[in-house]
Amino acid sequence: MMPENDKQKNVQILLVDDHTLIRRSMKNQFTLVPSFSVVGEAGDGVEAIELVAQLQPNVVLMDIDMPVMDGIAATQLIKKDYPATRVLALSAFDSDTHVMGMLAAGADGYCLKTIEWEQLIVVIQLILSGGAYLAPQIARKIAQIFKSTPTVVSNQVSSSDVLEKRNLTERERQILKLIAKGYSNQEIADQVYLSLGTIKSHVRILLNKLSVDDRVQAAAFAVREGLV
Image 1 (cartoon, rainbow, N blue to C red):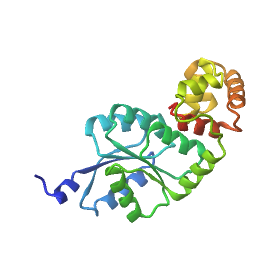
Image 2: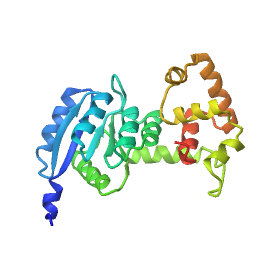
Image 3: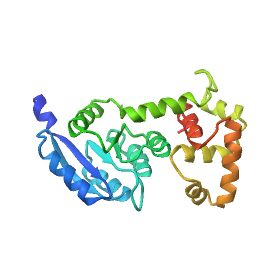
């Protein structure tokens, strides 16, 4: 049986960030942690997916705002094909769209880039052990979002029943799921081949049917009811 300290040396990390300087700085820092090794670097979501397939790292540190493919879309595809790979969002932003998008995509944690280095190591170890982590600011934001989003059904009612009760059309269900994944109105329009004006109209009707004030509350509704 492999000793515990040898097992820890197998922690392999993929750094995903479109800023080369940030990646290089983090890589240098990880060389100071004997139990961790950086096995690859990616500058966008497409590269990240390719490297996960090639390298199969234990942990992906995922930026969100990147060219070609953002971290939300990349995380969703990585978790779909490699569910055992742990994905930790590491972003400079704590916007509602970023947070809900990453959580809906299946991220195992969300940290801000202001996190202390020692704390980041602890968080990585936590998610590797099967835990999940939200930065305190993010946890408070999530709590506030869910607090302001109406509870609709009991645990005995399926997500399908929820949508039926709300009288959502198939198109509205599709748009709701895309909202929960962090897509903008323009990105949704591109996905479903409709005009931006038509999507805006669908979103207004959708918010009214769900009795919520904005897209973030709609996303919270979708995540809470297991629609994504």
